[in-house]
Image (cartoon, rainbow, N blue to C red):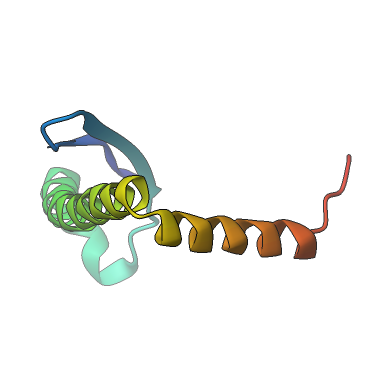
Length: 99
């Protein structure tokens, strides 16, 4: 049973620009015996409310942290160099496979 399908948008304005995030999650659940007697609309509304609250919290924190990290990256040469070195190390240890 499809319990949830929703798009959540979160926009962060920092004065100079903006970050927009959009998330779509589909959750399919086989409702176990004790709950299968509960009307589907009640299960869907409860599941949607829980997922909406969770996504707003998770996505909001992610976008805020991304904006803060970008601000630091854009204004701090040492931090930018450090982050670049992490990317280089990651690329050196990565294995790419062609299919």
